[in-house]
Length: 446
Image (tube, rainbow, N blue to C red; front, side, top):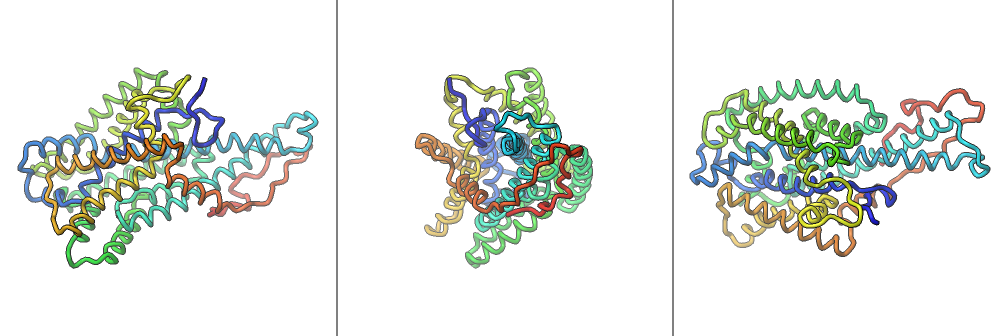
């Protein structure tokens, strides 16, 4: 009997639902990102699409993908982050308990020693997450030279800032901050929507469209991408990304995603209801996207219902993936999606390389400008995703992890700063170790 193992260690069971969901999520990400590489969004603000197929696809994308795929990405990131922390704390606690004097003689640890061991493991987990977050920010910085819409850096920043809250499960603080951000996001989006008046071009689309001009140099393209990325990453720290990550973190403390087979009815209701509410919330934006008038209040409504729709996507994808399987790996489409999901960073970055090749490099080399409608552009996005599926399948058959995942893990491991070995409490101690907020090693590592 063999169970799918976890990326956090060979002892754990890897639940297929998050991996399968990540694999399909990257298809949604490709469909959401591809307009940033072409000029279809620029044309949308002035004239509706002339092709019926383009109009239909715009409706589908607006109702089910735009502002829905990125919250799904954030929830899965939060889930994976919390899973890594939980397992790191569990394994670290065992290791610290094994290091206690008298263990070899069969002495049982005292409650004070158990609390001390868990405290030290929590500190280690927090340091690991922050160090990993710093490296993700660097990865995002490099990726922004190619694609200013990078989100790796944003999630790295969230990990750095909120590592302590996540490791120590400060849910009340997270809930209060999330409520404040949601209210602020509604107000800000409402104000911006009133100023925009229409969907227009996204910042990434405008940047890439400008870079495609003949007078723009490679250096100006890179510098502009970095500036846009830095500005958006900093401001996005106070957007819906943070509450959505916290939601994913909370899901890791339940078995909704780990064992979806136990909650089929609930997940089905969330899935259908979430996508339905998201679709209703996107109608106003879809009308504007296809040439109709833009109503101000539809902009924040579209964004807020995006989180509900993302919950629906996650519920349905978890149901489709099912629980952990005994006796073998996943099969069919689930296996292909899982291959991509376990190499999500590699697949995500590969998408940018492929989009840049198709929409920037080839036109520059051939002198042929691409004039594509919405539907054809979506077809290219699907083709790009299929290439990443093929790449990840080849890596899986060769027994290789994603190269960027390997690079990140290696960088995180080699940049670790060893802290002094903590002194365990004396057998007669009456208090547990000091909390991490007063621990000398509170400065983020890495």
